[in-house]
Image (cartoon, rainbow, N blue to C red; front, side, top):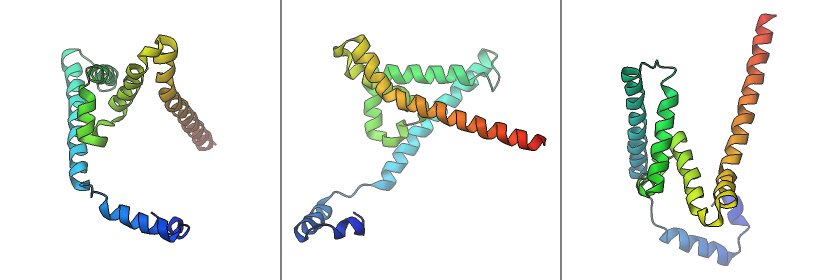
Length: 159
């Protein structure tokens, strides 16, 4: 807790904070980072292997191999989420499973599975987009801002 917030606490609250922090289990930060790095690296290695596979056997180039690779990773993430396997990996690896494509697919699939009893439209669809909506909005807005900056730089460079 920061010193600024700590000053606002009463002596009893400060005593309790000291008591609670002394008994809080210490987190193995290095071990957790190593697990996250290992699992994230494995997921990325699988992605790289898929890129190589699509380039070798389906005659894709480096630019075009990314789309089917992302699709396969998303499919596997949703499949493993539905089977309950992805959650076990995420529990063990922590942030290592939060790689953007697979982590986002897991989040959306989890929301859909959790609320399926409420129906397809309001349960599955509505709750999926409660999570996906902000990501899509900020993604589109960020792309818009970057495009405006790029166009501005190009216009200034042409003068």
